[in-house]
Image 1 (spheres, rainbow over the protein chains, first blue to last red):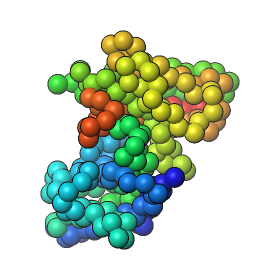
Image 2 (image 1 turned 90 degrees about the vertical axis):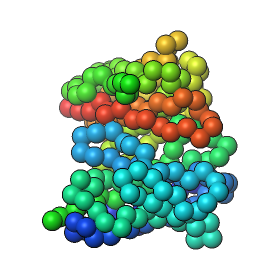
Image 3 (image 1 turned 180 degrees about the horizontal axis):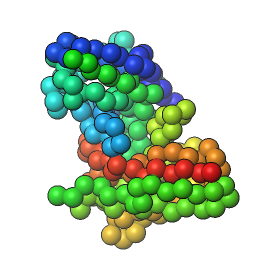
Image 4 (image 1 turned 60 degrees about the vertical axis):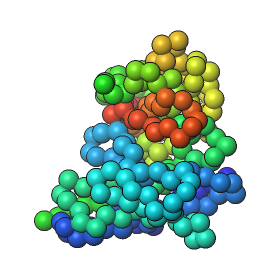
Length: 115
Length: 114
């Protein structure tokens, strides 16, 4: 079985400041890792994913994440946030042996960007 | 290109009733997954369909069922509704269930059970 822990339920941040959202996972098998964003009253949108290869993954809207196998972490970062980044962010994993549609999500981190 | 379309967007039911939610995937996508989102339990996987076959099922009671049609459209049904079934139900589609594809989510169907 696997689990996903997002260490912060809410992260307040000022506009143009950096932000880091933390995600730890546990799994007895190899996994793929994802970050999704959900804007108010919308579905989820993929920010980035780690399948294999380079541990630093770049995604859309200036986000990046680093896979750390030894610490079983996949933290998301953005060097300078905008008001429009206010949203809920979800870390997710899927087992490499599972089909693509079966994701296990963390509880989410609400990011609130203020001027 | 049209995105994933879910209908209805909002609905209110009473306990004991049943409900059917519909999902039209992106054109060409053959894999459809369903998720339940609640404030208490977060996002939970319900089931996944590919080529009209259920490939995976989450840990939900038998009251939750689904199907996929030959045009890849999918429906999910919840029978004998309970208050705890109030949730946002999200559908996601992808080209195929394997191979590194991205999941594309619809805006969801918000179900309120009174």
